[in-house]
Image (cartoon, rainbow, N blue to C red):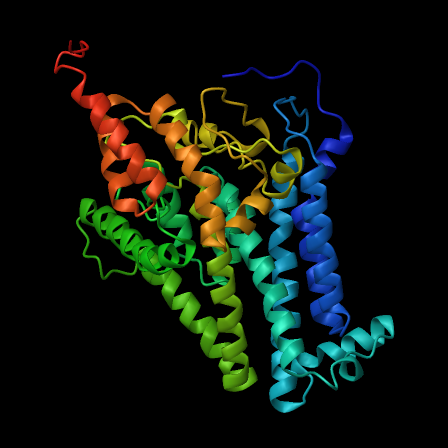
Length: 417
């Protein structure tokens, strides 16, 4: 593992990690103004992000930051931005439902800025609601899984936990702060982990299989935690039940002010946020196997050192060390030379996932390399079984080669004549 590079980080490196917050502010602005040009703006941003990632080099340095609280303040700032986006989103839906001015927000905005929000949203239709849902899901996805992920690991900071759970509420992700640190980080690479995709499994099958598993895992964690306290699972101290109650209350309030129209588009936003989350987790441990209860090692995650990727996802591309040291903050994560790596940045890799044939063409050689260069002898046996079940010809052929290699080794590890 590398050590910190000498010399403190420059000021611009702090600002580079503000990218998620800036994107959220831009999305919030588009939600409020209801601009028809929002689709063009969204497409432009996506193209710009992809181009920036493509042009960005890999970054293996970790410079010390002398003012790390700046990052914490930026993450906390995501909560009021999320609340502001939520108000604009629900106002748009309520206006579409009744034509009114929810909470007098349009009047207040016109009195303070001169902007006529009612006129801007006079012609709202399906495309406007869809755009608002996509933009809001982008904000809730970042708040729940990128920034919320980092905050959820700061268990010694009550405000960070509160911000993580509150941000996650608006994407119906309240289970995440339970399942991720107390489930995934213990079971990664094993069949019971809902964030480890199986070999040959496409993103769509993975999403359908593991989404219910997220909830059952979180329920089991809370049930077992309460049992140790001598309490039943159906108790007010069950954090999952409290999260569900908050989500239900939120949906009731949305329905009350914006009708079934509002509830529908809110659920569209939440579903899109959940699918985007699955796009991210799908590749992070794809096809990796680990003997249950064995030590978590660097090779149990796929790393990505693309400079822009790590600005965009708060350094989580350095995934291996995150699993080795979950409490280490993202700005201090280091390059782990013994970890397997992606061939591309996160955005391009996620683009491959939605086209399964391209994904398998990209990752089958990577899995074969993992089997031969990273897996322990026990993991090779698991990998061989996974290759046989994958349905991928290249991996099935790899399983045959692994069987031949195993037959040429005696139980003591000595090569047979």
